Length: 263
Image (cartoon, rainbow, N blue to C red; front, side):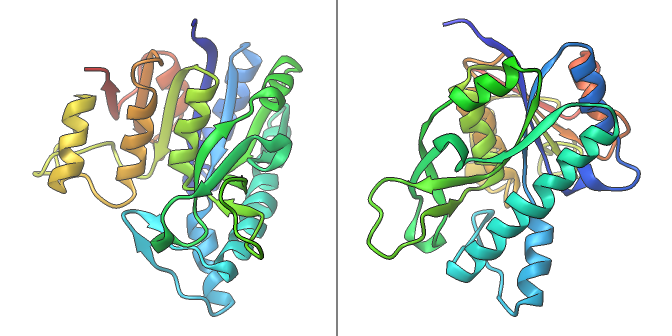
């Protein structure tokens, strides 16, 4: 199967900063005829809202433990506030976008990832019809990482599951056979034990960094997301989204950060 000429971009909180250029880059690339799918998180804002509501935050292996209270907050923050802020910003820069979640169009159908994580989903099936329609119509789909609890759902359980945004981006990129998967984060890329940036890694080398604990926390799902598509995409990258025009430079072949390639 041929690659789809689409780039999946995973953005975090850095993309909404007052000095950030990510939204500007997204619009510029769209106006050049590039097809983009944006997946966003909202972790820091979710943590702030959980604190306001008196709900404790716990992470296991870089993923948030999501009980029912945390799920309600995560759904409201990501599918509501964060998603619509990004869409509005894209329009203000002259672009065209539509905000959805993985529940819309039954895009992401899930089962519970691990009981220790609570209502966190593992994507089992991705239905791409809605994404295909939006891309053909000239929109940037902006997706909140939520999914439908489709498989093995007990009676009384929530109908929606929270999904790690990095993992979700990898699954979306795999499902549409994206040409590129780019993670914009708040670090320079993947570093070795001494803190030196590793500009290129094979999938096997990246897995070894996770196994040894050199890559830890939130870097783990980013690496796994890259590995998910490393043999189908032309490029999988983790780059510093704090740098001016990091996304545009990456798309022009002048990016930094870490590139993970197939073995």
